[in-house]
Amino acid sequence: MTNTPDYYCGLGLRNEFIHEVEQVDFKPSWFEVVPENWIDINVKNRAVFERIVQEFEIVAHGISLSIGSNTPLDKNFLKKLKTFLDDYEIEFYSEHLSFCSLENKQLHELLPLPMTINMVEYICERVDEVQNFLGRSIALENASYYYVPYSEMDESDFINEVISKSGCKLLLDVNNVYVNSHNHKFNPKKFLDKIDYSKIAYMHIAGHTHIDENLIIDTHGEDVVDEVWDLLKYVKDGGVKKPILLERDSDVPSYDAILNEYKYMQKIYS
Amino acid sequence: MNLEQDIQKRFIKNITSDNLNHISSALKVYSDLVYYSFLEVIEKAYPRCCKLFDQKSLKDIIYKFMDYGSYNPLYWRVALEFRDFILKYNTYDIDFLDDLISYEALEIQMYMQKYTDYKESKFDLKNSYKLNPQTNISIYNYPIHNPSFDQSPNSFEKGEYIVLFYFDKDKLEIISQEITPFLKEFLESLDSLCNIEEVMEIFSSKYEVPFEDIKEILEDVLSNYLKLNVLIKA
Image (cartoon, rainbow over all chains, first blue to last red; front, side):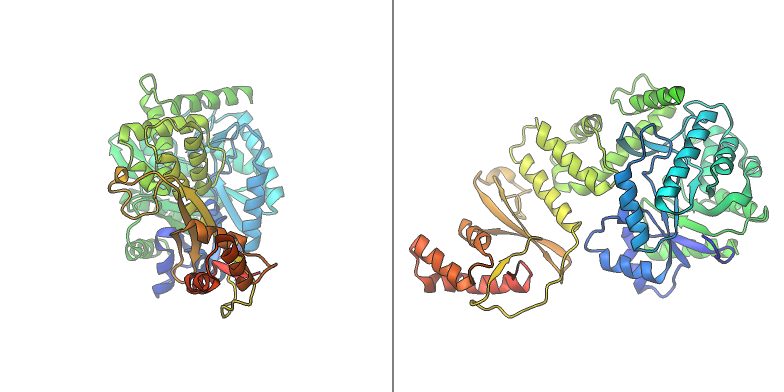
């Protein structure tokens, strides 16, 4: 995400509406794709995916790198990932500050890391290894979490330490900040005040699901709520002029409805 | 990192157990998230198999699969890992489960293939053709390819059902079609050494059927298969 216009708005590309992207006149400025969903492509979607990748700027956002897991990085997967990024000339790749596998067993869910000094150092080594392997700089996303397995520092310090020591960029997920602040009872604006905005590569915004007064889940399955839009405005007022992307992963509504939310994002973030 | 590894191991052990009585509500959230991630993949991949089980039984199967282990980061490959798990440990009292899961898994594999688009050519008995390696011929014990099978599976007899799978490039769909043992043998015997007419002659003498009868039965079928890329030039 270099040399992009300020406030550049993008949309997560999903199977559910991929065929509509070409049919509707209004186009998002850029798309983000989850490589795990496109490394091998369903033959129904291959041609349209390849046309979209040629026409739009694309960022890849992974979900199974498992940067914080205890086993060596999956070189077979990394090779496939690099081939995918190279073949489609995708320059930028982001992942999550979390883990999703242990001893090579996949859990297929983003899990919270122990927030320790050792973990910071370990992740820095792994970031270096991934960046060297892929030949690209990467960004890590602040993850949502519902449980803190162990911590020697608070989350903002953990994120800042990883980002500054590893040299990678931050993918700031505004909804995750809100979800975590609600579930762990902290002030999201005070959290954001501690984040080093200069390291942000781009941002995510998404909806979540309200379970009860003490728990909301980062489902990307509902519209973005006003409180999260307000947080985005807060980040913008803090001087951030970085691209932003709208994610929708479950209960995906009509493409028209997604574009309406996208246009709303454009309106308030420009 | 020993401390961190121990913490991570303990965490995963807690959230992947189906005995949730002892864990905190926060861990229960992760237990549910992991379970529903697996459930979503499996329900999407195997809609017909999943309908054979009630919610409780399906949950039990998924926890056993989580314990068995998924090692591939790509979701469609997780579906294949699940098929392997069922084929290895199938203890469920459903005679056709192995067939059905193999059938649904094969459809997934075929949808995920990259297909070569062969140039259309006119069918000619003097040409040599072969079965496109991107097709598949599988044999099942139950007629699970039959659209009405799911409504009353017990009304169908156990037997030998041969199913040809191919990609229809116009419909962008995987088509499955029952074929006879004779057609299977014929298609599998095609190669560059003989042209179609010569293969028909071989079958004519092998089965003591007049050449003209074989030609009448197969010519249109094979010509259509060539159009569909089921057959390609050898």
